[in-house]
Length: 349
Image (cartoon, rainbow, N blue to C red):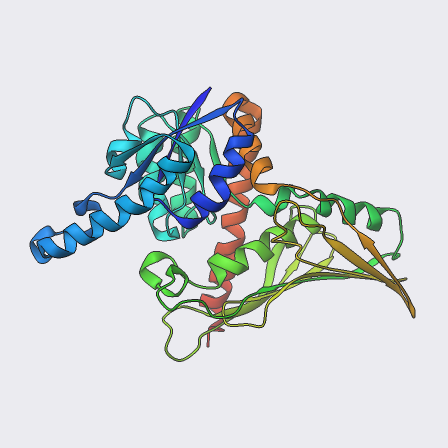
């Protein structure tokens, strides 16, 4: 039984991770939730009032108490105290992206397996460093792009393989959502915000999946909006060694879309909620052949649970760990390719 602790009483940890972890109770047991110590939260305490410190601790403690009341475990004050605890085997990290590297590295160096929310880090150098530490210490490092485990992806691929829409001419993936609260970490550069690392990461991962895992970025565009310090929307073209193309578009101040379009020589497949289908949701797809249109349901699935199962496999199986190291590296490499294209061609506007 793997004893797992959570860094930060975040909403996704409470609403998605722990309910799924309960289903995996043969492999995992939840033992602790950590809140940041005043030093970890504020840094230099000489610049912070006692009132602010007390408010921060009380607020985080209230959040953490709801975890304990509903799921058991105990509250630990200090992320560092959690990652170095002898009572913990694995750590779940749902912090903002810019904090992933620091705490994942501490956890790995303390001998803990790491389940980290996407993206693994904010750059390829840091991601590769985590992979090296994990590999050297025979530890699991798992990045939670859970949508990739949904049965609907394989089901759609099987429709294509059967020749229902002929030869593939183009894949088009769109993922964007309306503006959130302005204090959301996604709009904060220091916390690793930006549309590329958020919505864009999903599109890059699915595009690479559709193209067989060997795709490259051949065009990229990132766009800013007045009043925001991070890119708010963007697009790219991906190509594999066979010349197949996936076009992706993403954004964080957009009309909601979460679509795949597969355009073939004899028909077109479209499906929405391709990246965000929750447990119990019945996804569907439309297949159009000229003027003939058919609608079909796709399998129901629980991707968070399956992602946790994959984490368990990584812990138990060295070969599976190696596969995940490569998958994580390839994902961050695509993000780096996007950044490099923008830097070289000056396309960010």
